[in-house]
Image (cartoon, rainbow, N blue to C red; front, side):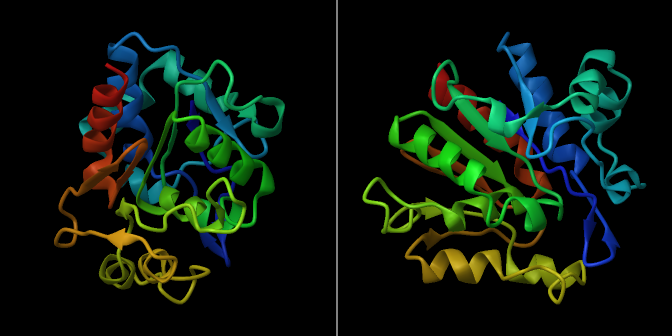
Length: 222
C-alpha cells in the first residue's frame, strides 16, 4: 500500500506529492507483480507538487507514470485511509514525500495507528524524504516509547530543507526530531541516495533515495 498526502498547500506554499518518490517505487513494485493500493488521508485525487514536474526533477519514472493510465487512475482515485483495516491483507506500506506530508502526516491518528499496527506485526513500514515525518508521532507497543528510539533511520535533512528554502514553513526539523526521539539518524551528502534498513523499518533521505527504498522493500519481501 502506497500512502500519499492529500494536502496541496503548506502555509500558502503550493505543494503535494513529490512525483518521483511515488513513481519509481510504484513502477518497481508493479514490475514485481505486487498488488498495489494507493491510499491517502482524504481519499480521491492526490495533489502533485508542480515542482516535481519541472525540468531537472521530472525523472524518467515520473514521466512514465504520467503517461500510464493505471498509475494515473490510482492517483486520481486513492482509497480513503480510514476505510482500511491494518495490518490484515497488507504486506508493506510505503509513504512517499513532498511537503504535503508536513501537514496531513502529522497529528494524524489514523495514520499513526496504521503504522504502529504494521510495525508491531513485523510487516514493512517504509518511507522516503518528508514521508518519514509520520514516524515522529508513532510509539512502540508500550504506547510511550518513540517508535524510532534505537533504530537507524534517514529522512530529509536540515541542510536539504535549507537548500529548498522551506525551513521556516515546515512544522519542525525531521532530522532534529528523530534524533531527539532517540533514533540513530544517518545521512549522505545533500541530494545523494541514502537508505536505512533496521528490521522491518525502511527509510530514505530524499527523492534520490526513492528507488533504493523500493529495492530494500522488495528484498525484504522476497
